[in-house]
Length: 252
Ligand code: PGA
Image 1 (cartoon, protein in one colour):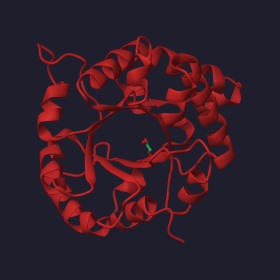
Image 2 (spheres, rainbow, N blue to C red):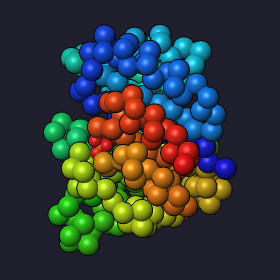
Image 3 (cartoon, rainbow, N blue to C red):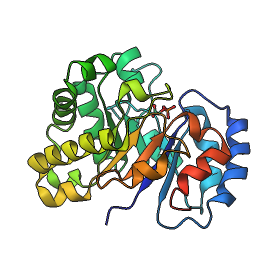
Image 4 (cartoon, rainbow, N blue to C red):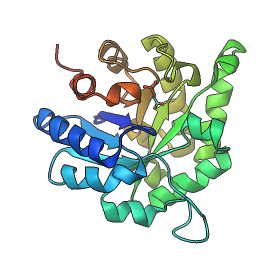
């Protein structure tokens, strides 16, 4: 019922030329993938190149962040209309690295999520607890607050267009993945929160991705969980072979 999404978050990796090389090798490999939405979010400087290569294929293009205003005196920022014009369809919002290093708050995330929805972009809103929070048994409270604050004022009709990524901070880039059970527990909590905010019917439609050291070796067991509808993949999306294997997680 929920179409899985496998999204690569390239972070600050690959020049435009490296992006073109990747796309030329990768796109033919996923040409026969039908039932998974495949997305790559490259750095801004590679978006035009990737969008050009992806046109008419089953690869979709995402961005890693955006500003909540359409234009203005915001040096260094990029807006939704700029992304849309290039063919971007998804935008990652509130990644933990942006929260930790660039001061992104739930309030800012909320403005960006609403802007993305209003602009026809699919927001991939990231939430997740730190190791310290997990050890204090605060995971549920932290995630609940991030989801509720991030989605304040979003109406149910827009709710179903949302994508949420649960990314435990302690699992990002560390090689430590949440176990499928640990991830499922939080995913099902997120779906319950969505049910309270938007109603059961909408909550059932929202794709909830897992992120944090997803690899070809662990993707199938994560995807087997009821409430895991895809993955947000950092390091393992940078290599054609490993990202192809993750996209085709359903192959034995
Ligand atoms: P990772 O990153 O797969 O390298 O752990 C995931 C993410 O930060 O989205």
